[in-house]
Image 1: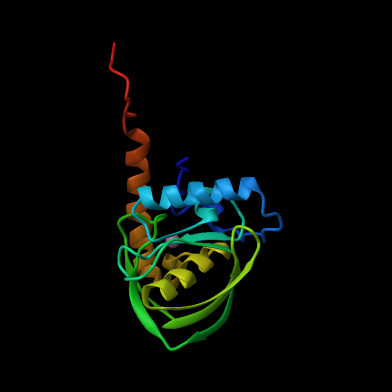
Image 2 (image 1 turned 180 degrees about the horizontal axis):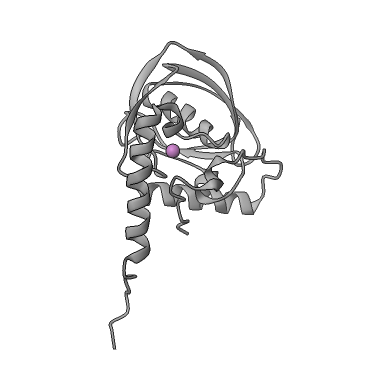
Length: 179
Ligand code: NI
């Protein structure tokens, strides 16, 4: 099931997420929904707070832009080690149509749990390393717009305000023929 993605600025995106303690079917359903929502929006990562769930859960799939990758389900992630520095023109499904250069570690060692609670260790580089860091920020209520200049942030804020008001005034589409 598709979930609605919150658009910045939204106070719910600024909250800190809580660790997952129960690896049950509700979690599995949420992970499935998050992957479906990410693919439908053509994103390479999505964090649970973006769909209004304040839990430490991410889905990442950089395969459209990085060879050899696939869907990764990430629960309770910990950055064990970050190395080097790189910049990337980052976008975010909560800030549609916008992208700005952000500095990140070039490679990261991650530890997290899978959907069954099993511990996974993973070394990530290039886009996957950036995606891990970007998505983990969401769990602390931080977005890429918090890592750019105040001037750029205010310009984006204005465009998002306009986008939201346009969406609110859109006529809802209906699959049903009009009578
Ligand atoms: Ni994002």
